[in-house]
Length: 468
Ligand code: AMP
Ligand code: ZN
Image 1 (tube, protein in one colour):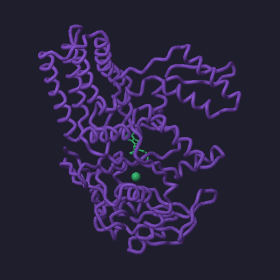
Image 2: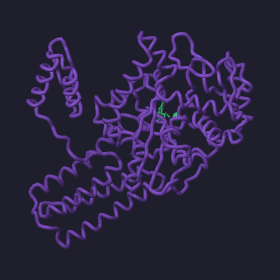
Image 3: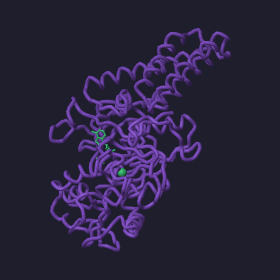
Image 4: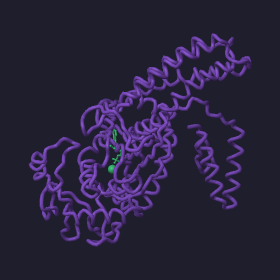
């Protein structure tokens, strides 16, 4: 199995630190808003990487953080006249709903930066003791030039950085020993959330968060560290400098980065007005379509989002789902006898498609080619499955298809459609629960309906519902 390692700039054979296990850390979102479809790309891509490792029999320890203290969160809290905690809790909850709808497996652990401050303070202390960090007026900086390998991930040269850094130096940072130094701890400003530390009441820098959370939940050395390509520099470069200086060993064996998602061939940005949240897309499409769309390109290539490409993804996905439905339908009235010799032979041939699926995934997770193998299997299913086949044969084909679509996180089983009366009944039950002030039950019913794709809207005229 080969993985492209940003560090060596080539594909390398994957060798786990511990046989049969994968320790993987993916930098998560900063939670100050609903996630956008750009944020969804690393979520979908690295969930698929995880699923493929699991398919291959690895036990995956998958850790992904939420950055829940940050300037943007604080700004939003001030705008709304509330606390940073209220903002981050709200958007973590919303993010988890979107992730669920994109069929992203829950992480083994989602650490929150604000719950791990103690460990970060300890790590900063170690860096100071080892001479890799220093304090000035309550701020702690990392002494970048002291870390001899600085630049090894982003392949940047320190002297080039230095000339760029000078011009980038902002006011208030002139107390740094070197413009290349970066912040590990900063004192609070009025009204900001803050924690005690030996240097000042304040908060950690963003980079130290991931170094600490990765160490705490996965150990000093991990197999894979991942995120979007914008994180290579400075975030991941700084994480390496911190972790390797503090722990005295190589931090991550493989560094994986997804390419960016653009919209209509332009960078996605709020000011250009070409910006979509995952929630907005969910109003138009089942999020399986978004997932399928993302996996139709190689994860390292830039990916363009457009209405036409989403329609193409929708049609492609439909072909797979129709083949699966058809198998179920045929199996419903098929003979219960065991597979005939001819069918055994026919089924045996489907191994070929699984092999080419695996070959594609073994080659740095080439999901585009893996999907092509699924389409070949679908074609084979459509030509060999009909009303004359045994149930065992039809079920086996279904199983083969499902084992591959599971890796992609695509659900082929039909969602059970709810009847209108059932929905109305649950809404009545929820109204009664609210009247009794049993809000827990009321919320539970609303979530139950949401999981089945029914969205409730409380209006002045009463409760309205619609299908997502
Ligand atoms: P952020 O909340 O900005 O820290 O981003 C969370 C994750 O989403 C990071 O791994 C980013 O690299 C990734 N990301 C942000 N925007 C995009 C985009 N347009 N395309 C792909 N990945 C993105
Ligand atoms: Zn990170």
